[in-house]
Length: 305
Image 1: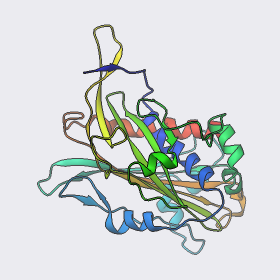
Image 2: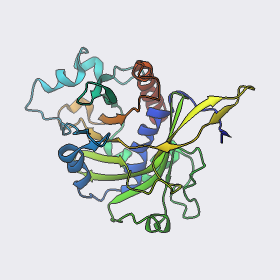
Image 3: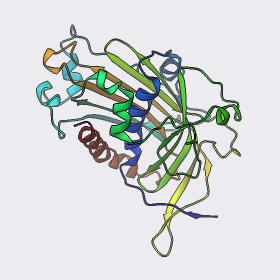
Image 4: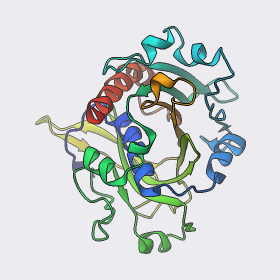
């Protein structure tokens, strides 16, 4: 049976990832958690299918002693242009398909880097970040996750976690995410995140939990989005989903360039499983990523301006 679903902007997929930057920074405060999740992503990887697991590259921390590092990050742009204080400053984007042993495409590796002109200390300010992004109190205990809501990311309560046998940890945070892909597919599920702080950087690792029973309303799942005869968007029947995660590295540039003392480099690395039935094995999803990323980063820069 289908149900009506509200219209969603094309860019909300990557905007949700950027929203996670806000979420993990303010929910973790300045206390440094462990890096078990990051190690799991880079050493054990993310299972896209029963046969294929993909390991993420380890995050690269900028080092003043490596003269070629700036060129690698800025790619075809010179460093001065890449780091300029502008909403339209360049973004480095790397996109790769992921394949199984039979050379069948099963997902995407999405990596992009960009500079925002805001200090790391300001980005760690919980009250300021909340006011910039939401204008509301995201820590309100009465505001519980609702699987039928279209809010991008809502914190889960202790009771909601315990009811599903999710092992709790003081430095791991859980939220229920609702992520539309190009107005064609809707992903829902519990996202776990862990943040590690260093003197000049913050690394926030996250993954979609696929361990919740498929009959549970909080289980990871995807639904097709279509339109009825009146043009209203409707959500089709949900199916189980697995295979999404990544990390976000935010690092101050002041230690490698004094002129960028109040600027940060943001590096996003995502692995995303794409079932063949989503877009009929076409290039549709990948073809949209560059424009979506560009629009999303510009929105972020405007919000922080």
